[in-house]
Length: 503
Image (tube, rainbow, N blue to C red; front, side):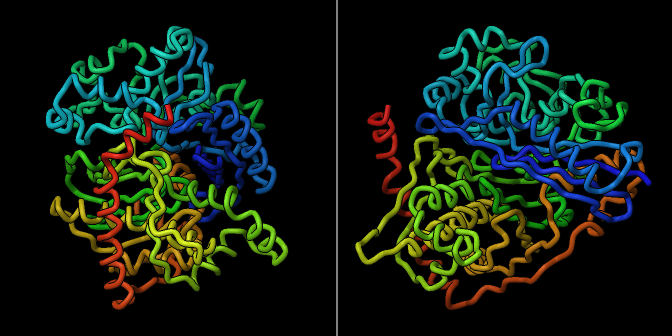
């Protein structure tokens, strides 16, 4: 029996899964990942921690499932993107990664932007200027950490780093390349005009590989660390949000997926690429389809911050009741009908604002408010950001037929009730969804030939309950959403001045 291993290098955790080719999940394991923010707008992680997690996870998966490593027939890796990892000549990370939601390179972004009109940039890449682009971050490294930059021989993403550790080959999967801002969407290759904007040498960028392509096999050294046999085929892998949306069943034109992870992703499956400065564009796992999508810099990481910094008493109470703090706060928030507005821009904002200067903002706070009110306002604020994306999709003539919800935050009934009311559409929760790792494992199985049809992904997951919008709540949220949008418009010229004070 052929088995397939999927690994997800996520913002808050590293997750692994072991599946067979018959629709069964044999084992799932995870380890936490540490997000570090030493200065305002910084977001970094340690690639060596990811690899340490992978080593531990693979051993747990194989021992926990009781499977022989001789049955392992393929490995796929997915991860958040586009993280920026500098590798030296031996493929070792030179420093911590700079994460996709890091917004330090603001001056460099302005310099990058000055080299080409945004209209031309959108026509070449399919997206606009944003803090997520790799070029400005490399410019920042070259300016602020010249020794690190001088030592760099390759720039890769999170999943690409793990793939290189498995195979000793260095490449980037095509969605990291596309979202880096260096690739011409029409040709799928690096474009000299885009490389010139950041002034980097083309040799820094590895070859681009499509998701299903086999890039190598597990080396003897990696196999010894993982406790498996060498020679297992490894595919290039895919973006985490793409893999997760595919696992949800978003395989038809008009399928929308909202992901409640560390950041908040929203993806719309489409049979045509849409070029819009406010959105990202990615290749679907299924050839011939695309994902018009967005990624909000903050999602679950904002809620985790509230738990850690503002809700220590609630965390203790929830532990005494045998509950997670998030569940406890959901109970408090369910009783709230707060007027508070929470702009969740604590790491700047990517889509659809593309504003690295934006700040987290709580409006309307009074002494009568409690932590439950703040928690509900945060839940609503993140969903309002998703509604903003839906408005952009609609403006581009894209239709939405079905809405699926996935990832850790989708376990919150309250959050999905809010989502249904704000989006004014039924929201279907996907159950038995271990995350993006399943998409990576399925991809490895598909590449091997053991899994035939793309729609067989449905055998590995199941739909849960559907959350229906309540018309009265939807009407109320329309007004609140309008005020939420207005708040940013009124404050957006203030945010850059606040940044100057901070620096």
